[in-house]
Image (tube, rainbow over all chains, first blue to last red; front, side, top):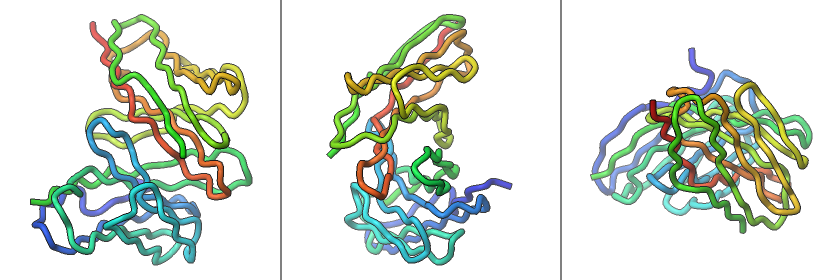
Length: 115
Length: 111
């Protein structure tokens, strides 16, 4: 089983719909992240959470919201989807150990298309 | 803010050595990371440099010069399976330490 699981893997929806992307992890990590990837723009951080009651905006949080329901679950919502939110979305996790580097572990992504 | 620059594409032949450069501008610095992403796949962690110098992991090495705000990923004995996109990333200078990624370098390995 994958350590970081994203659902759904693919989604096509219409403008104005509310969409939720879900992420769950079995790595026991405290830190969870949501990124968006567009061609030629790399990965951009939407929101991140360092524990259940901690939510932080990233570079491009407008139009998105998140919920950290448990240590293992972090969901991303688009309240009213618009076509320019069509992208590949990744969830990632990392551990917490002082200042040492903790690599991020990514899920397989959700390909979202908004018509 | 933070910004990272990498070449958009690099092409090399099987068995060769290729270097992917990354320059960064940050208000603080807590290390440079490299990630690999195959088409349609998830990014995977390759290496991390917190201090100046070379870190070697098998065929891959990563170098950092903090005084030059510069790093590179060196891939040796290239294989077809190394065709992928490679991203450098820096950690935010705040206590939160989230990552900022470069836009990626697409490496194409030719036979």
